[in-house]
Image (cartoon, rainbow, N blue to C red; front, side, top):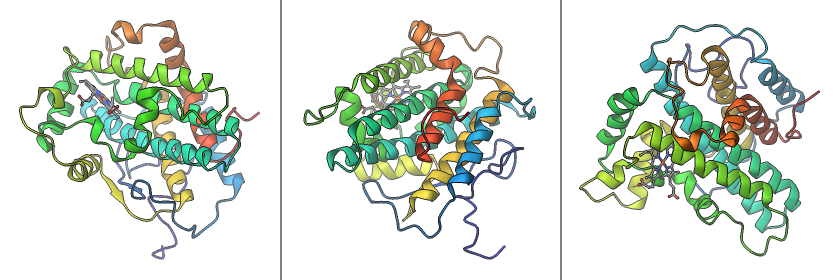
Length: 308
Ligand code: HEM
């Protein structure tokens, strides 16, 4: 293979068997632009047919009998923790770009609200997915690994979250946007419910490392670097089609994993706190595959609904 011809990280997923990280439940580093930087100039063009083909594959993953991939729980949930977070970083970037499009009037507001709402759903789906690990395993493996990086390690350090933090905290768009945002508000409400539920399920007192730490957090820039490096995320000029390819690679792997193992593979681990027991959350959980597909279709600029 000639250097530069295949991006490896950004190759579109093959469709079929497992094609991520070199082996089942392997990881891949994520390469994203610096937060706030525009996409790099494209070096290549992806044919819409190639995107449509991957979306068709995503749609049938759950219907075909997926390969049962043997894996130790530690490896499975480590994969989910890192890869699920990487998917969040990409959808956060896509949300931020949607908000910029809205502010600059580059796309019709209704269209932007619709795709941003699907990305918010994608974030909620990834909270359920990354948060599906058994609480015991979370508390002996995952939480200590973050604490080792910094005693006060926090989701609030995520660089890609900064541009959209206001949207999530206030649950509304800036007042100049005159369009019905009910769909987006509902998606953000679901997101907060799921985040609270995952926190309650995994950590008995729901207290974050940041809240328990006896030390001061690092400065903003250092916090971002600690956070990125933990989640094997690097920053470089990357064109949009490579961002999208990295998203699709991960969505396919996640969908294959959930089809093979279910969301809660360890018996008894579907036990949930009340936040995750509401009919809305249970319905959302049952439609996880559709949510992944809608995120993929929005990112590929295909209509968000499933293809016929
Ligand atoms: C499952 C994956 C998770 C993701 C993607 C995630 C993401 C985030 C993000 C982006 C923030 C910043 C919110 C803001 O500043 O407005 C945050 C804050 C927070 N998260 Fe999570 N979170 C996750 C799991 C958890 C868990 C398991 C807990 C349980 C302790 C938790 C507790 C908190 C708390 C208390 C905050 C407020 C800031 C802090 O104290 O660190 N989260 N989270």
